[in-house]
Each structure stands twice: as structure tokens, then as C-alpha cells.
Image 1 (cartoon, rainbow, N blue to C red):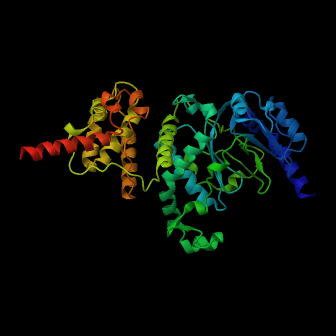
Image 2 (image 1 turned 60 degrees about the vertical axis):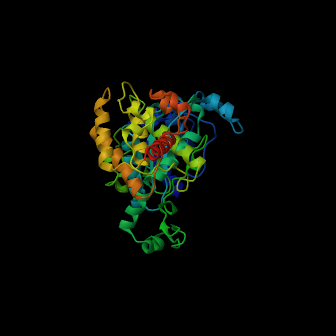
Image 3 (image 1 turned 30 degrees about the vertical axis):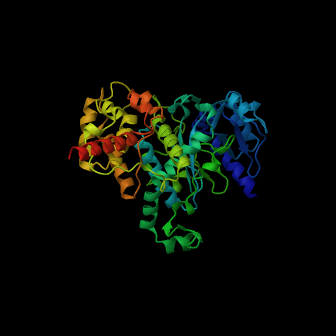
Length: 432
């Protein structure tokens, strides 16, 4: 019996399970689905319209199934050479899928756990995670977790750009911690021996670069890109792309992914009740805008010297400090933390101010969420990173109701403070 015949026999028995067919059928809805027949893909486009289609493909010798992260009005109308406009007209939405590719599963697990924590940090509780069947993992936040429009753009048409921005943002967010965790396990020399890469290839300006061995390539996020479906087999390893619980990432053992005659149902695409991904999307777009305008480490920030009293705060910040009477607490917190840090307010004073502000909100944010945000910004400060509050032309100010007439005059809250302090000090010097 050849290897192909053996795998096809195992696959036919494995995919015959109703629980596997159920999760694959649910995942396939509105997606392009392409089977792999051991070493060659089926025709494109293709789709699974009825649950019986899965059995039909299995009978034809399908050994694995791959589907699009995009959802389509009619996947069978897809074809090579469609323009962006034509693709946008066909697209219903897209799920945010992260593909962790690494030859060493321990490093993949570290990356997956940090991305999981980054989701929690941005208040995303509903997401799926699955083993790739090889040495990596896939994480997925469903399309329903994001708003239908962002800053006047239909999100379904903002693909792949918005997904790439989110991934690049998350990569930047976890980079330092991922680097530290990998080096806690292995030295640069050991990593070099393990990967076959020179120490020069593993570092940037003398610092270990975790992405030299862990691939999180936003360039792979593209229209009609396919990923291995949940519980689909991997022909190279004969392991299943099993769906796992987020809290079990660190304990995951590939042995549990061996194809068995019984697989319990567990969905991969999980639909949230609210727009849990909105905060991540907005933060990523704002971060990308800053990166695009200036190099993160070299960008010019209005320097504020000396102590800034509350009377020197811009009207927009004073208005924000009165508390949010409706939705917008997290965006307001983002503005306030960046403002306080940019005027060099001590950490204990920042914490006190924000606690007072939070109690004035129509509904206070949880203490855990507040502390998580503060801890993250402290860590950024320790790494020498400082982020100014968004410019006044950012939609945040109007959306959360703190836009004032001064916002039309000054570029940024820090510009207001800098000018206000100059005038104040000039008056004081004249009075002396």
C-alpha cells in the first residue's frame, strides 16, 4: 500500500464522523472551500453547499479541506483576475485569522499564548484557536466581532488592509515579551544551533529578533487566501487540526491530535454577542497611522517640560475628566493615559486620576481592565516608548463627545499645553 493510499483510507474513516462533518459544514458557510487530494488541490472556486457535499468529496479521495477567511455572497462566482471593486461587491465580510508558522512547537505555543493574552487585553473574549496539524496554530476572531463600518469605510471592503494592520500592531505589542520568553528557554547560541541560522540572522542591532524564527506574516493575509479547516488532517504529519481551549495552549501536546474514531464537536468560528473586536481594530488603525507618519522610535513629540497643573489641561481633557455619560470609556481612557504620560505625570498620580475619572463614568470600567491598561503602558515606558494622545482631527474626540472649539485651533492636546505654559510663564516673568 502506498503512502497516498494509506492516508486516503485513514481520511475516509476519520471524516465519516458526524461531529467532524458538522464543524466543517458550519465553518464552510459562505466560504470558498477547496479539498486537497493528497498532493493536488481540487478545482477553484468550489464550495460546500450541503452537508452531503463533504461525504462526496471524501469518497472522491479528499485528504484535507482548506477554506477562505473571507465570506462571500456566492463563492462559486469567484475567478482569477477580478478587480478589487468586483471582489468587494462579492465579499460579505472576513474573519481575522492569525497563522503562527514556526518549526518548533514550543515557540509557537509561546506566541499563541501571548496573542491570546493580547486579545484579552483588548477585551476580546470570544475567539477560536486550533492546532495547524504541524507545528503551528491558527487564531480566529469572527467577522461579527468587528463593526460593519469604521471611520466611514465599510469593513467588508477594508480587506486585507485592516487585518494586516491588526496583525502588525499585535506583533509589535508582543515582540519584547516573546523575545524574553524564548531566551528564557534557549540562549541565542542554542537557538542558532536548533534553527541553523547564524547569530547575525537572529538579531537586529544586537537584539534578538523573535520573528527570525516565528513567522507572523501579514503579507500572507490576502484575498482568497486559504487556511486548513478545523479538524482537517495534515498529510505530512497525519495529525488533525484540532480546536483547543485558549487556557490549554501551554499544555497542548500534539499527541492529542492523532486521528481517532471519536472526535467531540467544538466550533472554531465563534460568534460574539457584541462587537468585541472594535477596540483592537481602532487601536491598530491609530497605531498604523502613527507608524506611517513617522518612525515609531524617532517621531517628534511635543516636549512638555515642568509640572503641568490641571488648570493647564486643554478643555477637551477637562471635559473627558468629567466622566463618560455614554459609550466611549475605553477610547477616553486611551486618550487620557497617553496625555498624562506625555506631560510626565508620575505613575501614582496617573492611577489616582484615572480611578477618580472611572467613578464618574455612567458605568465604571472593571478594575482588572484598568490595571491591565496601566501595566501595559508602564511596560512601554520602560522600553523608552512614549505615545502622544491622538491629534484633534482624529474621530475619537467627536465620537465620545469631548470635542471643543479649541480642538479646531490646536493640532493636539499637547500643542495646547505647550502654548498655554509659554504664555503663563511669560506673564509670570513680566510680573516679576
